[in-house]
Length: 239
Image (cartoon, rainbow, N blue to C red; front, top):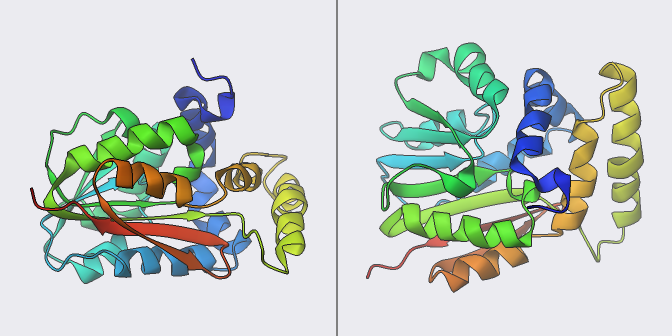
């Protein structure tokens, strides 16, 4: 039982089902294009040369896939997402031409049906904030389980830039401006405005980094644009 419904898998799936049709353009517009830069940064940070199998957790509508396949044209991507509509939008609308490269599985990333040691790379962009600290521990276990010995991972997430002198303006934009604009231009919706509270509660990647280290993984943390996003990358040591 999860006390906060915003972290309940069924509620998270329903949230992203509602967002799927507008997710790609609205996330770019509302972030002034930074999300696309951060996806590229997460791909650049993958510490691997020639992976064959990349598991993309919380894959959404696959915004990172063009960057992944540009760097690794021979790789195959196994995409995991809990949202049915995100799945449909990704494969039926955005990525038909990449269908031979993508296997999409509708599943909770915390309980993925994939076998152990399947992945050369585990990757994720902007899904970490939808998990609470206890779920991060479970997710770290999944990352360690899915990776082959010597495999690599890279994950990035919108964060709360504590200590940044302009943080009050950032928080005003996230907490007040985005919900207002969403209500006006997206028929009164209040789904994308959850990015503000999710990212504020998430804080940064320190917690997931600790959980990954506890699983025996080598971890590096990076900050992006004064901490408005943070990322973790590293490897699973060879046994």
